[in-house]
Image (cartoon, rainbow, N blue to C red; front, side, top):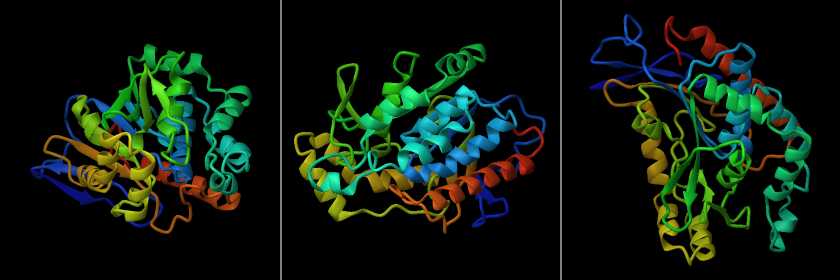
Length: 318
């Protein structure tokens, strides 16, 4: 039976846990394990993960076999894989703070709160991902990258495998927060939306794909417990009333999220999970537009990533 052992600095800039199996440390004399990097989404809260990934990238730290990202987390992972480690902060400060992107007044009059169409147009034109470098990294080292979306028709998770021609669209689909972005996008003829609806922390999916050494970068504090929101559920149920299976996924969202968080805290025997999470007082929300707060969160993420690299046990890849 696996037991979770807190490993220092909990409630500081990063929270990490290393899990032991039956009291025996995994860190000594063990064969190579399949490792995964999982990145949670969360809108502007994802700036913390962007900072962590910048710390990883600038030191060349990339021992992972599998990458799974959700929403903003998938976008930050893409920049990391492409070697564009400054890209996420630059886009956040230059475009995400613009009223062309987040605009409450436009939303009140029936438009998008978050205009992904404008954002994708601008970033592809001015700060495009280096698709060649990204896919060379994946192919040369036989790595797997998955982007989480949610099927509007079935309410189930879609774990999308991008190619050079589909990556940018898949990232947009995964980032399409219901209601806040009014359009419904499609993947292969199937209507799809934000992956965070059904699998916001896809550590269990990483395990299902064979990973037994999983690093999870959170956008919520380690002890966060998602609560049901009757108002949000009522709004989503009304807006998506033509899609009852998606509405059912909205109803189960808090329970599914909390179950995923429990997996991270106490994985099954034979699985090691390391968690990097922001402090509980991180002052950033889903639609924060304060540049100073976002810079501070990014800096905390970089510090947390650097601490993780300093403190990980010798021979521990992730």
